[in-house]
Image 1 (spheres, rainbow, N blue to C red):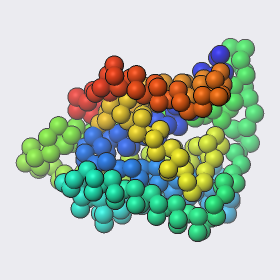
Image 2: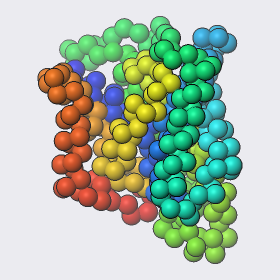
Image 3: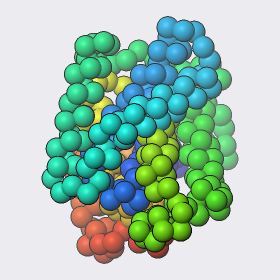
Length: 285
């Protein structure tokens, strides 16, 4: 049971890293971005290329994944996304789902349709014993990375940038009237969310693997985490991601014939109990 919970928490941390950016952008920009998983896969492929073809280290690969995904997100926000901020949600869905299929086609063309080969560094291989239970070093690293990102994001909210983000979340018009450049803030925040997705995609290489269809395969999981946790918050998706990870891993371990069915049951139950999310938005927190 302890191993199941541990693996579920590690899986939940990956979902949190990839979904928290979607929560921030949906809460701030009110944009239905179904292409969020595409930025995760861009980061994952960037990390794999850095390690497999350039021969650089794992830490460098993670940094490159964040930067590349953030840059791609910033370019697309400037060229495409900002034109539809005030558009109908259906237009936003059509744009973002179109970007998903473009990313799938592009990655298939350049890297092929199969799973991307990837090998973890030796330091993250094997197990360590904690409390008499053997746990994987890689999964332990994922948990530590997720907690670190959570602390950094909560700390960021206490900075001047965080105060501007909270102001824009509460009321964009008033924020603009106080001198905040809302459009620039949107660009930076969107790039940050995409960078976090890219980092999560790079970290998921050793657990989930990576293929061109990754954005479609995990799109529903990201949406479940954001909807159950509460769009526009950080702690809400964190709690939701942990619950989703534990339920998914436990279901596959104890009820493998049910597949991912338990996740949808969990989602429906949580939305009936907490229709506004586990932690409803009160600013960005």
